[in-house]
Length: 169
Image 1: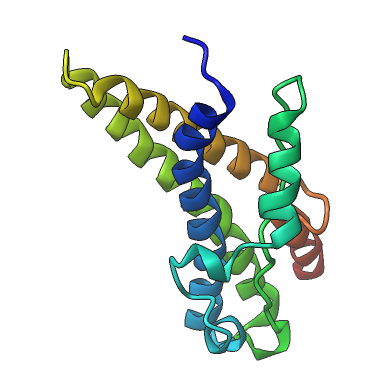
Image 2: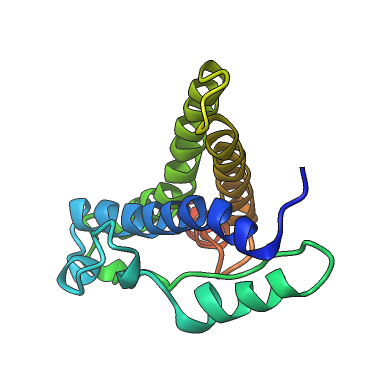
């Protein structure tokens, strides 16, 4: 089935917002639990997407890519500030903070997979196709974010992980 631009935005908006918000909130939550309240004090331990949206990276750039032919989409969220020195055990704990984002995307992909299974069970219901397409979008965006953020290149989460694991050895 082919979708127009408005339909694509409607299908992808919720999964993208959930993926970005959960990813960044997970970093902030784990940092707070491990001793750094920086992100917490800035209100970043939240599922409010407005706290995590970067106007250029989350809105403008993806909209430009949606309009352009080719189906390529790229963007970013506002990075969560973490003060390594405030973590209980900075060398070890930064690894957990970095891993929290991709881990949240893995969990979200599983949740979207369950919603896809639910959509399959709605045989003939008017919600079946929109929910199925949205669930597929949710799986796709979360798997892509998880894998992308595991790449060991800063400023990606994997880059932070790689840099700090080298310090531990």
